[in-house]
Length: 409
Image (cartoon, rainbow, N blue to C red):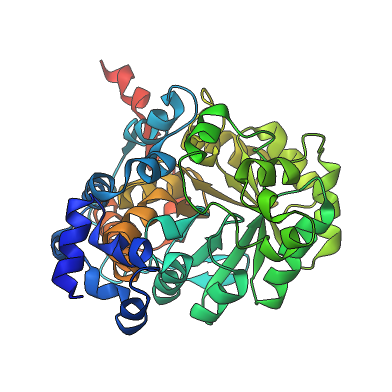
């Protein structure tokens, strides 16, 4: 079976050539073991210069059920649109005739240096985008020398991801489950694998109906992270029921005291993810959070919430320098990263764009996404008159809301 035949088969079946290995793996097992997935990279990827080009191509080739799983937001999708539109409402007030010949876009998070103020948010089931899945993303972020947050719903085991990128800066996402042993299982595996932080997602009290409906059409949604744990708790039939798995681990009775419990069972720093208000930010600090990731879960949980970039100012103001503050949601360009830094974020994260990179070219696609963002971040620093991250934070009103200019009309 030749590569050209596989590519033709994929085209006729409306699958990305990068997805051939996954969907053909059982039938063409020998071929998969011999050939690297990278040989199926889409040729046009080399010409992509913006993240929306990756998105447009990935959306056009992914099977509808997988595309919907990745693309859709909660409810009518209002917040999903707002996440991106909110960045467009911010204006950069560039400072000119500054010496920007020696720029440095690196920063530190939780005391560790990263090459740029951009990391990768947790996104589940990456094998649906590419057979190399989370291992490819881990390798790409390792190469980029930045943070990769592994999803609690990863399609790859924690140990496998750690082995794929042994020098990577990796954090582990988890939730406070109804069975605390389930949470501990995830935390201990992350500790053993050398992960540097635990990202505690707190905005998922229930599984929204629209997400549950989409999950019905997705193959192989069992989570590798909890597989060993579930094997001791569930029957084979239950293991294949993703809704049952999710119901078993979601705890709707949780309070902030549970965050304190989390800090008591691990020495790793706890990043609380999902905060959108100053009130909850202060509670996170009070109960032991080391950092806050301002996020609305990619607009996949509750429609009608503010965009994270809209919530960022009040949270930064509330916590001051008590903890580091990060943000994700709607970030698609280097200028978005710059805007978030100017408002007070220490670090910015992207989620879906990495899936588009994976779908277009596996590890190489993921690397390309990060390199494009790095180039845009550096370019924005130069054009806005900033040589480093510290200078951005010192400049007052470097980024303002568009209403700032309404006084001139």
